[in-house]
Length: 334
Ligand SMILES: *Cc1c(COP(=O)(O)O)cnc(C)c1O
Image (tube, rainbow, N blue to C red):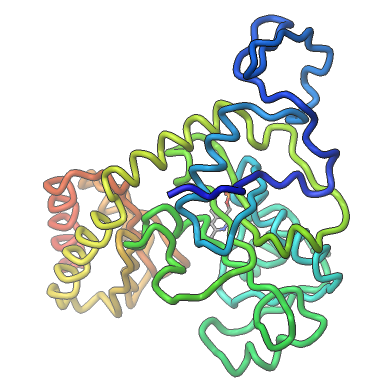
């Protein structure tokens, strides 16, 4: 599957000039046609294309939701979210952004303004104005909040929908993108964490309409660098070849079933989508996380009372079983 007009968006920056580079050595650069150039623009950032970036952009857009034909590359999840916020505002000329209560979108000032947790926000106030939070999955509250000043969500008002798949993207939830489960068409979608298999990268996908309406400029020196792009291309190829989202779906259901079967009194609820599992406890998560660590299993918290499991999608089945055994023992004793 290839997208014929797949391309990186330069978002208001000088249009990409001329050559696409394949190789460099000391101060010499070579383009696709074998032409040689003396580099007097080093350390400036990605003014020119590289084959590594072009290959990655095409690969990413070939697997992305079909209505998203443009991508801006950065270096982290927060940067991907910052870009989405800027693109939404500058494309709609609207100021208001609605985010979900209890959501996390990163810790730079714009992304933090969309993030819910008070203890993350308060020491750094004033944050970016124009953000409002509504309860997650509360359609009525969302309908009320989204009006003609909103730069996010809903066809009724011409607002844009931004989906943050920094954590859920690339197979984690049992689909390549979590949005596939709901058949929603976002205008902007952010990716980072698993995108390059551990090498820092961020991506903000957008529709052609968003790009066309965008006024202003946005850029990143290291965004789209050849190292991250090569790693991300390899990660996507592996994910698609091994159909890792199916593996996440399968191993995730084994996990959820087993954990639900425990009927441990300390557990309030088991929630899961693929290999993203939350164990909500009646008490604090910290002592359970500590006990798991002592047994050789590393889980993470999610709020104060949730034990979160995010194993790599390549985890061997026997190791996943062992981890679940340890969880079973620890939760039953807790
Ligand atoms: C981790 C995360 C971010 C922030 O990503 P960083 O790379 O830490 O800046 C944003 N949104 C979501 C949903 C995340 O899970």
